[in-house]
Image (cartoon, rainbow, N blue to C red; front, side, top):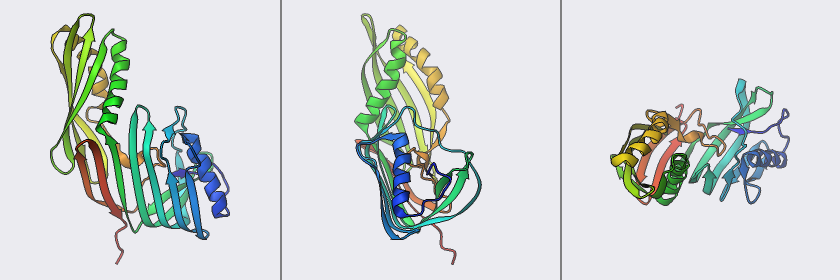
Length: 274
């Protein structure tokens, strides 16, 4: 979804571009204006491009609006392109690419009676979301070190091991070298990640094991946090890159792969009525 933060629908492609740039800059710190609009015959758009390379999600980014009321047609796009390389979201860094053709954007209103655009349909498109293994390790290390430091435990090393178990499933194990005073041990946190046909990811079978008193201490303070994500599902299509939600499309050929990067790929399109 694309909040416009206005009660009046933009009257031109130039105005649309201005409002979308302001909206994205509320959520992201970006090196440049991320949105460009190439007009056709407004409200028909030749291309809407959103470039978020190097962008960082703001700590005070507004929450997604609560939508209410009916939807109605707003814009027709020949091409929608969203790309972000090295997008920082909390401790994680992601690469995201969404390309869609034959797009229809609808409009609706939020609780403040301001306009939000929704991606209603698309003839076809592709989505790819990925993160380097090293970036995932850095993100995990940042979270674990914050908790470990509260208990006088130092995390010296983090290693992520991922093994594919089919086209939409993988087993992950995080090995952490923990130290307190003169004692050290290795802690292992394992989990299962499964992806469904609607790009909902589910984390399950989360467990923590560690030897000796340091291992027991570390798993003791980590387990309550791990239990919060065990069994939890989250939508990869609802990332804060505009919250791309496809209302009348079907995803297909959903794939999850793990090498030196964790990558999710999918194709999508609106089913033919004929």
